[in-house]
Image 1 (cartoon, one colour):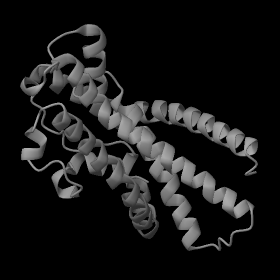
Image 2 (image 1 turned 90 degrees about the vertical axis):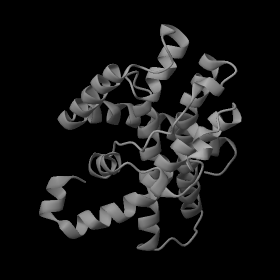
Image 3 (image 1 turned 45 degrees about the horizontal axis):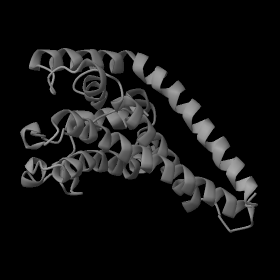
Image 4 (image 1 turned 135 degrees about the vertical axis):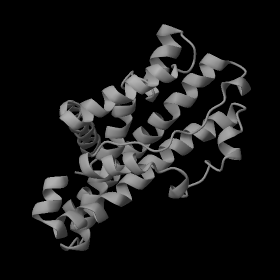
Length: 229
């Protein structure tokens, strides 16, 4: 997908968007809900009071971040507001809130790739999977687990305002919990530059392929062990 695809084949581009949206929406929404839910459980009601503990996409989607996700496969949602003053153990709790979104995406990645493999096993054992609807379903599932993996890996990059910065800061740097406005702005500029030049997308694609291939090999080995294939 991308601008060139839109210009050369708009019908195929629209089809790609319709297939990608069911994968993007859960990835972005549940990522942010996980942040807010863990913060709420740790004593911070800010996200709940602002209506962010909801599956309503209107509460979470960032226009630029969603467009970026559709066009180049990497994007973001509106950050969930967090107030560390409510935390009993600020650094520990900030770490837990920060990894909650990444953890949600990794869980969805594993569930998605497992469903994909189970459908493949069902087809291997003779389940009728005629072309058309099943082909579209496979595409959605594949994009679902790739997008969730990509979002998890992307957010692990240790630059503000990404979750990876909080993880690095809480575990090693031990600086104030939130980067200064200037540092966050510089981080965003670096992130945009990496996205627009394609450097980040290429690097993450290699990491994602390595992880997906490793997980698929593990699942195949497990299925063979239990006699599914």
